[in-house]
Length: 279
Image (tube, rainbow, N blue to C red):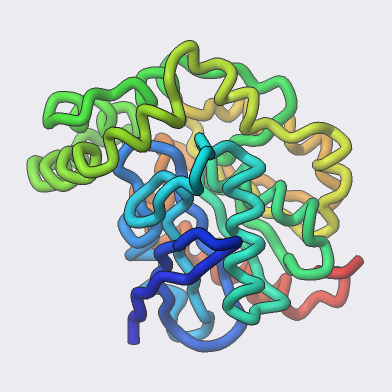
């Protein structure tokens, strides 16, 4: 049964959705305005729940998780909160799946907690050293919290315009309005500095000991393959990359069946490999 609850992490509330039983998988959403853990990962969580315990939080400043007092978010805040959440839930061993910004957080968490993180899946992941802010990511962060802004943002995320439906636009616009104040405080212009904050150093990436799967859309304009996924191949010791053709920034939606097959297979194999967490 799906459980929604609030967990205290370092004195701040974190909203989290949990489902399923088995080895734990932490699902981390991206940075688009209006994004939440449950919204980003609903279909994926449904596919994993039969074999895995799924944990999908709202990052600080997103959804129902407020920013800690005096905080404006950032990689360190989101990484520490993810680690603290798993500690609070009593989970000592877990895989991490992160989309876009969440991919950078997943890699940072694996570097900081090598004895806890068994495997990492970075989906359209940020984090590569020196990766520039793309024009499309800048536009996503600048999207206005209304129907026009939601439609424009979704059009940048998906290659196939069939995913930009009226109901999807309405739902995202409502979520954007609800979180507009917190989001504006996290990503004010000039925004290149926030993209830089979401890159990891070569030292951090070399500290990642868990096996890593990168899944990327060939036509991703928000985190382009050439500047984000490909450079990570040079810095991670145990990494493989799967590129999906005719795919934008959201492989989990645009190629859902294939994405789930990749994810389930990788998580299962990594769970059986003794070279995972703690290497």
